[in-house]
Length: 142
Image (cartoon, rainbow, N blue to C red):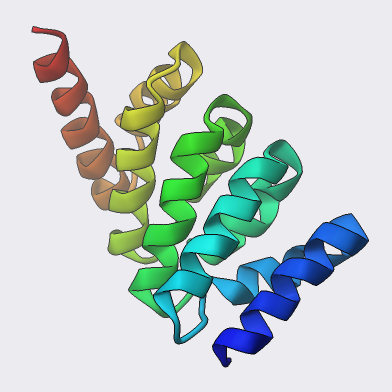
């Protein structure tokens, strides 16, 4: 995707609203980092309605897209917590680690409670990721 295409996606999203979330999420994959950052900022400004698209972006094959989506989700905060808690069950460890880090940064009581539940998971990788995240929270408090 060219820089011009990603700018057009951004403008379309502003004009068409919900229909253009896909265009903004595609902007996270643009070659230009400026275009990627602009798409991230736009998704943050949209807020809660953008959360499902950002959660989907956490599952992208490209790690840079995950990082941008994670940044946006941290900035959106509490509205993303339920979907992030679901994403703790993702097949890929890198996604689970990213999600647990997002939940730690959001730090709401709901996020902490969800991490505690996940720390009792029968999946050892989910359990371990959640326990590490909870340990980070404990260290931050002390």
